Amino acid sequence: MNILAFGPNGSGKGTQGAIVKEKYGLDHIESGAIFREHIKGGTELGMKAKAFIESGDLVPDEITIPMVLETLAKSKEKGWLLDGFPRSLAQAEALDKALKESGMALDYVMEITLDREIAKERIMGRRLCANDNNHPNHIAFDAIKPVEKDGELVCRVCGGELSARADDQDEDAISKRHDIYYDETTGTMAAVNYFKNTDVEIIAVDGTKGIKEISEEILKQIS
Image 1 (cartoon, rainbow, N blue to C red):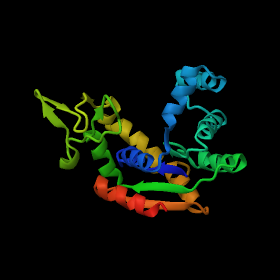
Image 2 (cartoon, rainbow, N blue to C red; image 1 turned 45 degrees about the vertical axis):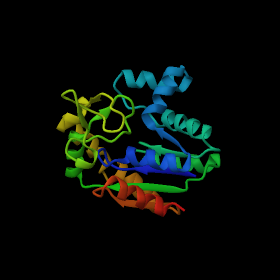
Image 3 (cartoon, one colour; image 1 turned 90 degrees about the vertical axis):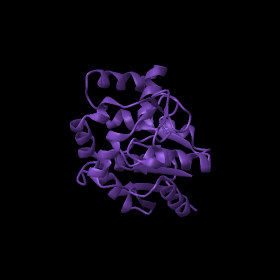
Image 4 (cartoon, helix red, strand yellow; image 1 turned 120 degrees about the vertical axis):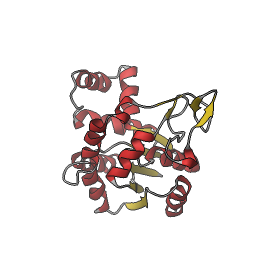
């Protein structure tokens, strides 16, 4: 089973991706990890990507797509859930074409929908666990509030140290990320809409619901 996961920053996409991964034994592949893996491994594609990253430029699709495909191919037998890619209409079109040419079927597109303002509030209140970024911790939601230990807030799941990403507290940075995601012309929402016009099954869930409700709804729609 192969799944693309979409959702704005703050929607809980990573948390739900981890739940689906565990349920079906899939590899949870995050786009950022693909770059890090290739750069750390010193691959030809990784070195090309590193040059663009270090100069502050976006890595071109002709480098990114092959890196993504190579990683997905390693999980071909097990199945995968790809998180964080594609981020644009052009990438969606290129990925769809490349998957078909490589014989990898895309079974589901999972979309978690969430209002932009709510997504921003969630980003600013979330805390990251040093042991596992997919452990949900949020200072504004009772169900996933961190716990207090020795006067400090720690991860509610494992007791690990918590931190807030600097860009999660920067409203301008959040706005830039969301400008890309909510763009229905060339951005990530355009990519989501592209797949809605294909024969791939779409799983769309309301991101304002609780974690358990959302996961139950997603799993119910995966046959």
